[in-house]
Amino acid sequence: MRFALTAVVLAGALAAMSDASFAAGDVKAGRAKATACAACHGIDGMSKLPEAPNLAGQTEEYLVKALNDFRSGERKNEMMSMMAKPLSDADIANLAAYYHSLGKQ
Image: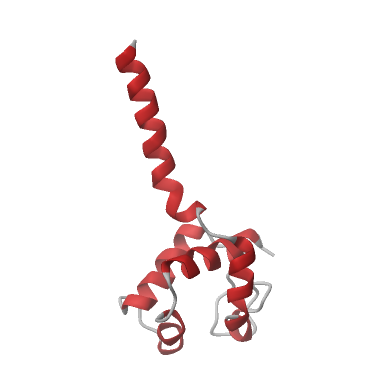
């Protein structure tokens, strides 16, 4: 019985940790940070330029990965690399939470 309870608690903790990096973003802080993104991606997450993708409704996981890849140089785009370079992990989580919260429009 004790082993089963320990296993359930451990499984729950592991499940919570696997989602933590994507659930940690602050939507309000992300909206404030998104003002720098609005010229291309729109404050509503709908692109204002043909070469800039819509971000509204994207999954947090995708947005976090994309911004981390631009920041590290793994993904190449001159403008996005420049914009992502100064972002902190918290900034990235907040932006991802904000754009995800907009839903697909």
